[in-house]
Length: 417
Image (cartoon, rainbow, N blue to C red; front, side, top):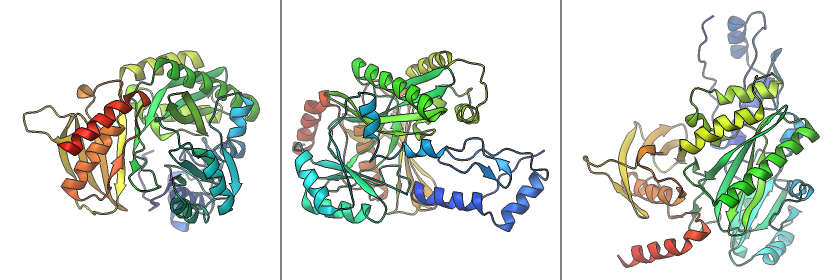
């Protein structure tokens, strides 16, 4: 049998929009889709592999192998996850959760603000991904703007102090015999100057948090994985997200699915189809390998082979063809590379259904290991605004606490140059 690609025209600027449209197709496909299925699989013998977000267990009589259980999905809610940290006796930042009551939310913000503002995280019936329903609130005006965005989409909002540090994630993979835990991944989330909204710009594995924070993250992830397996029969990959602060790792959420940052591990072990491992585990199939053997294999490869997937959607331009620029990082700045220079990265602007797509391909062989890439991303995006008019605007990187003095010096030098 020859497989073929069929475009269903599903697209959207938000994950929630795409998944809602996919769910509608899986539950009520049109005649064209039904005809394609009958032609490809007349005996309804095929199995279906869907997206990591999917909760629908069958498609026209065919089982969806990686469908998530309702109890798994519920664990992603940012307004209820603090109960898990408390049950596991895990350190966390203080937080308050309220229904959509602006005055109570603002009152909580004034109480929890440590001087750098607070973060409002909304959750409810819609899928929350890519920092869509997350806002930094530093003033009454920003609180009103955040409320206007969150109120139509969310049932509740969590208020938490803004935590200075590097946003990080660690993946756990729940096997029948235990939980394999992988290395920390930097979540590249620049802050928009003068705005409450964050820019989710992907992930990278170049950053090494202090060893004690790495151990703290991995130990908590293992405990979370075992808890999920014992309480809700969880199987497969989950992400444990939080901030690497001067006080250690403080968790903020989990995502009970195959996270986008798994691309860093896919690059590290290209001969191992990790996405299909996820499907097999969720389906309850025996992989013939223990959780510890799997962990040792993938963890060592990922520590030795760093990778990243950094980029952003842009609406200010609508390119008709791909344009690439080789770039060099000099301190906290980014410039175009000369023809004879070995570039640190490549900036690429490509057409996309919603305008343009800006990607920063980091050249592994020329990239230092250990430092976060958020500051490099901010510098590269500033160059993209200059070269292409991508309109991302002034951004600020999340900075490791131990690097704050270095950043302040770099900013001062840039201002006086």
